[in-house]
Length: 117
Length: 109
Image (cartoon, rainbow over all chains, first blue to last red):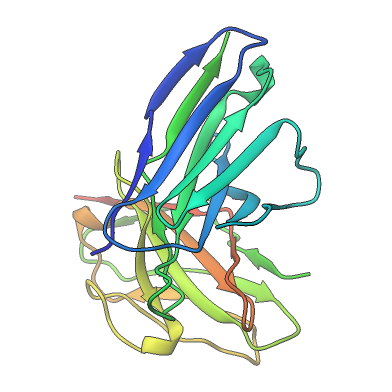
């Protein structure tokens, strides 16, 4: 099946620094990717929809300037957490839909655990 | 706005017992419903979708529009079914998925 890869899987950074997380679709093209945030024992919260070649669509309450999303190609979307603070520590998951099908199935990355000290 | 509710955060059954994970939704249009599963230390993956009307790993789910439910069922649970299960809804002609809060299923030997 289709594979989505995230990197890094774990990252620890100091407060005030920025962190970039990559999401790649390895064997399919994805015009749309999604970024979720998962809190411990909670559901996945959709942060934003990443659209190739255009601006991302952010969910209500998600700061655009803090969570920068770039979808420069059909196989890569990046999430940059700017000026990270301890409250940004979380598990970030990306997902992608195969542009060549219309099944509605989303393929998920393995997630990236961010810890801000 | 659409919403997905999974009333049980935790569900524990014994091996061989029937299991039902509840999912209710609210959406004004015609939704597509999915069940995703996350096994320990693995990524989230699709288990089944309502439009396929298929049985995967012995699990089935029927969309009940009258009750706005999409409960996941299996007649005889196995230990390897222990996992986190998420019910999800996709809007008509949309691509966003809205997830429920998940149910942690534990199948005891």
